[in-house]
Image 1 (cartoon, rainbow, N blue to C red):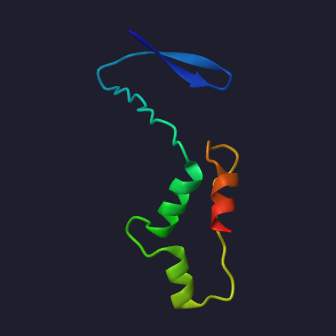
Image 2 (image 1 turned 90 degrees about the horizontal axis):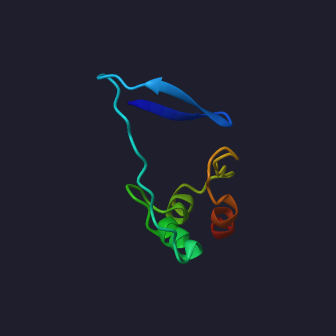
Length: 84
């Protein structure tokens, strides 16, 4: 059985061998209200304090927020609107 991998605008075909494991994506449902979910995630992040509390505690002179570039399917416009 051959495996077709996306490559550029087409595919490359490779022969499946015993030492190859194929991982299939698990697609998630779209959020009904992404802005609301982003706000909840910013207020209650996993594993750390929220951005507001960090800024309040550390009182930095400057802040840099890093976002994904255009090569990733990330709703940067929605995220940055909520951060503001």
